[in-house]
Length: 303
Image (cartoon, rainbow, N blue to C red):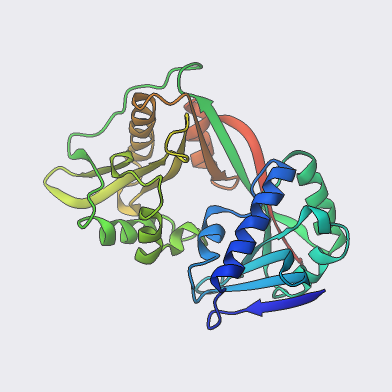
């Protein structure tokens, strides 16, 4: 078995990227949940200079496992995700991949059910401890407790994202709103445009609250997502409020506007991802009828 590393200067070849995505699909079919998050999947074939790929070959071209590590700016430790082919588990592949990652890398597990228990056992056996929890919450759009009407103060107006107009303004307000969030706050215009190229992109589902007298100034936003586009489940993809507009109820208002939009599309269910430490957001979502469905965890080596 061999380990190959592709850093930012040596991106994955097209065939390698295809093998990685095929491997991820095999693992999802076996485990019931995708092993790679959206950002990591998008980075498989993107040539992102901040990403390093680690491939474990049983015998080329048979890919036994894959790991990806992403560097963040500032003092944030890198984050990583890894996946092992179902037929190559418990044969040292996961350990070899983990050993190839930086010692300070924080490793995500997106597994659920029995797969989550197995991932937790593996992480602890490798000297890793859980350091962060990401809750998947959801609710029905057709049943359950009703949500109130959106209360948008008169100084604001509501519109949807306009391609060619709002990209830079959104990147700036997103960075400010998520300045302490290692993933969301680091999104660039390149990252935004990468998502705009996806089949699920729909600017009508990207709702902005803007100054009534200066409609280019974004005060709050709710980017909804429906993936697959013909599915019946929507997602509260990201909700953000400009730091200087917090405390005005805009987060709740724009969340409700997004729920209204998803229900108007005829969808039946909605989910979202929220950090356990974001107590205010968890409280807002719980008040709108969301309940826990899954918990994803990030692991790290503790001092």
